[in-house]
Length: 125
Picture (cartoon, rainbow, N blue to C red):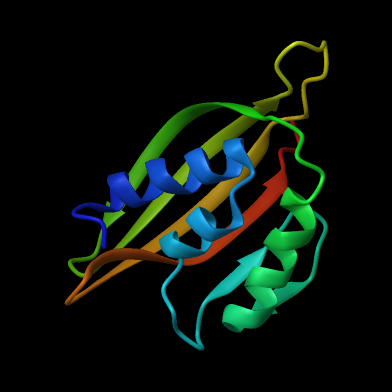
């Protein structure tokens, strides 16, 4: 699907920015063990729960712009962990969300790299 974990991550944030559920779910591995934790939210497990959460988040069609900072990649062979800070704003407005710390985990299989975990929390700073 994606040749690198970085390509999968770029597709994840592009889908998020454009509000495209179908593109978002192409980034996620079609596996029962995927996990997503949104800021302040519960642990969501499996494709159905993850898809439903993104359907709800992306339903408002608000355009979003991301400034991603401080990327650190931990390479574990067929699994890579990306640690970064998400800075989200709404173009054309003065709205800027508080920084969010994200951990994104990608796994490589025969089809390429796909997301298996997204865990985000509001930065305490």
